[in-house]
Amino acid sequence: MNKFSLPSLQTLRTFESCYRLGSFTRAAAELNVSQGAVSQRIKTLEVRLGFAVFLREGRSIVPTPSGRALLQVVNESLTRINEVIYAERSRQCEDELIVSCLPGFAIRWLFPRLINFEQVMPDVRLSVNAISNPVEFSLHHAHLAIVYTQDSPDSGLFTEAIFPVCSPAFAQAHGFQGNTDDVSQFINKLPELTLLYDVSSAMHTYSDIWAYWAKSRGVDLTKSHVQKYRQSNITLQLAELGHGVAMGRTSLVMDAIKKGQLIQLQPARVLNPCRYHLQTYPGLSRHRGVEIFSEQLRLMTEEIDAFARNYLY
Image 1: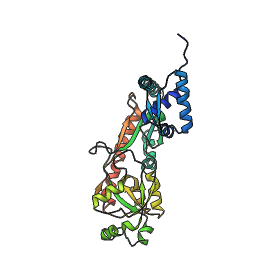
Image 2: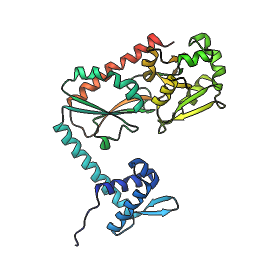
Image 3: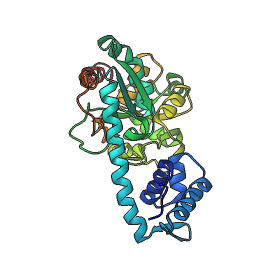
Image 4: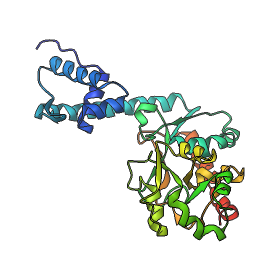
């Protein structure tokens, strides 16, 4: 048998991404490289292997039988490699804890409270990845992920409401004082205002949280002027600057409301259909930092319930 040089890990990762996503374009976006680079890697892979792994059908790609057979081995190998890496990292780095979460939750809730974790974990180095896909454990080497999903609606770290928010100056300019007497006036005038949409959570059913709120409240927003952005922290920051009305979630707006940077424009009667959940890397062995962080996070999220009782109407 002729000596065969295995493809690089980067090439195999590209192959897996193309297969899973069914597109060179989507794989390029996920891997943060150009479509040309992805196409060249697959072409080089096929030349090295001596067989095609994909059939090109217009802009689509279809795996060949050989490609499907290769994928099974690649997935098994990548999974095993990740398991070994995480096992060794956990064994050798028990004084390090890496947590991944969405940028909005990190910036508007978690980061301001990190000092509380540092006080109870002075000998553990805590790092936070603020990324759009926290469960990419293998890419960011995280031990824990705080994910936002519609799954398991009766569970989660906490329960929160959704409600429109804007800056006090914006509210005053449009005749709102931020109290219950303005509810009917607010609903009638809402379609005339600029609405700031967060579309960062497009993977789940409730990607359009404004539509969910409007349906729950019986409000027609079909003629509203909408501005869309990729992250909730962007829409809320723009709302603080007076650019329009954003949809607030209790955890993400509580600090701004306390500081007077945002005001609530309607009673918080609509529960958020999604929840934050804490996920541990599946291959992680017992880790002291994970246990302490999980317990402290549970205690800290009790603050969200307290805020809702004391500040929201």
